[in-house]
Amino acid sequence: MHKDSLAALADGLRNRRFSSRELTEHFLTRIEQHDGTLNSYVTVTAERALAQADAADAQIAKGEGGPLTGIPLAHKDLFCTNGVRTACGSKMLDNFIAPYDAHIVELLDAAGMVTLGKVNMDEFAMGSSTETSYYGPTRNPWDTARVPGGSSGGSVAAVAAGLAPVATATDTGGSIRQPAALTGLTGIKPTYGRVSRYGMVAFASSLDQAGVVAHSAEDAALVLQAMAGFDARDSTCVERPVDDYAAALGNDIRGLKIGLPSQYFGEGLDPQVRAAVDAAAAELEKLGATLTPIELPNTPLSVPTYYVVAPAEASSNLSRFDGVRYGHRCAEPVNLEDLYKRSRGEGFGDEVKRRIMVGTYVLSHGYYDAYYLQAQKVRRLIADDFARAFEQVDVVLGPTTQGTAFALGEQTDDPVTMYLNDIYTIAANLAGLPAMSIPCGQAAGLPIGLQLIGRHFDEGRLLNVAHAYQQVSDWHALWPEAYA
Image 1 (cartoon, rainbow, N blue to C red):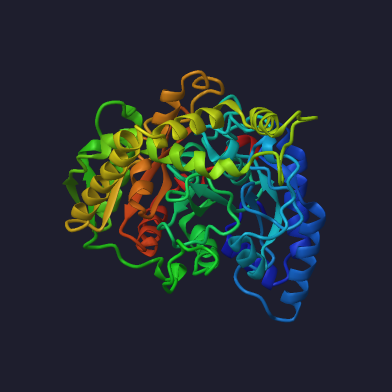
Image 2 (image 1 turned 30 degrees about the vertical axis):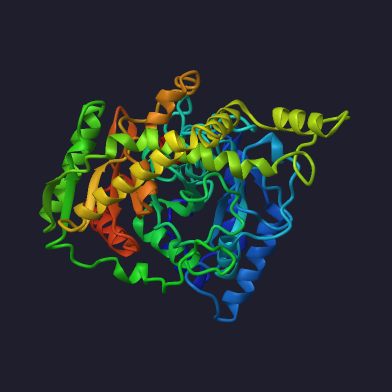
């Protein structure tokens, strides 16, 4: 059952070939069998999951429910889940039990989905390998000596290994697409404001966006359909009707104009990754799309821009974790200053401290204009590049990452090299655009990802292009041998 698509699972549930309880028990058993090696889950909510499964079975028995009723999923551990620990991969929140549900948790619960648990992540989503987690690193199911990417490493490892059929995730600078690429999954980051951030613990508020990782564009479309929509509690959420993503799948892509940015195919790109991406582009051309060279001249500035803007916002957002109201509190503080210093010093890991310090510096008096203000101006230039590109093309195509999954510990001592893992993904976040990664090949048995970027609120087109490619390829259907 763990290798079935969401549509196949829904059909099995409706036709009583198995119950939601049986399906949930199947995944809980796989978690027990395999997660000791992978470390993808932080919290398994077995009792809650079985209760939700029984409720789903009762609903299905009455002929009610929708396409996701009774189907299990995992949530990235920064979505507040009422009564369940929400730790964000950090010692700071290790004892935090969320008193309410995030908006997307509400919506997916309402759709009848079954929550298996909360999955591991880089601390406060700061990282590209899921090695900064307080709960230890997550391992890549394709090679457990390698990283699954990050910060949504727990989400992708759980789905890639069949410990959940689908998982929620977040993307601030590539944290859905990069790990999806490294584990052979389909991951989509929708337009900024398409999905509510209410109840999602913030890293960088102008960049964070919730999304989904799944095996196929079809599965991703079904879940994104359920989690997208307006929420008045999030002032950045856009009041706009949600397209029928599933209905758009299968549309003819003849005449589609695909842009290939020269900046995505230059120095640093692994030749095997380039060959796989070129081959995928050629397949789309065979389906009737037109390939057009384009320029995104400010793309090389996206990494330095991001690492001014994101730490600045992080330093502000994380100031609330002070040992006073909730979260980690140091033992026996002698005064308020000691409480703040030791609680934060003990509660945060090295990468979070590094970004808080950078962010505080660029926002400080005398440096705000030189760094933060300049970064926001460059951010506008990057967005303008895309606006001009979309006057010529419908979709931008390129690699998701420069290479395949790297070894655990290989980059932990070199923050700059780690940051460069997101060199192709960050620009979409800075511009607020929807983007996704789909598997398009392998090198030495490790997955390679293809990135698609679209116009604002054009998720349906991206999913359709991805689905069209997946109809003529089988990279998304491959499984790591140990978990098939």
